Length: 95
Image 1: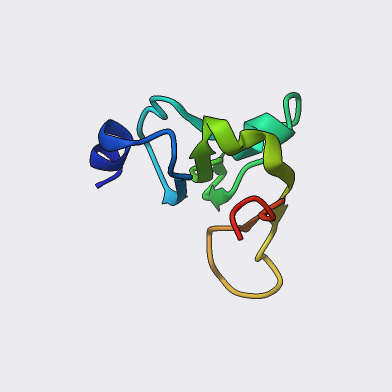
Image 2: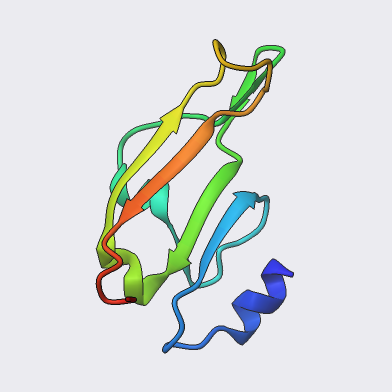
């Protein structure tokens, strides 16, 4: 499904893809990397392995509206191996 969305993307539609991805962005912007050029935080932790597989990608034309990306550990809330990811953006142009 993600590949189909990326292949059919249009410049007049804002695409926001959220999930556990392992594919090439192909024109979409990784919102975490856009806002955190030097930081290396992960979203998945299990048996000594950590990686950032939970991601939020957005259309390049809207990437200048990104305000903040945060990763919240779930260690003390649930027994999940995944952390919560949150993206804050200016949506005034969409409403």
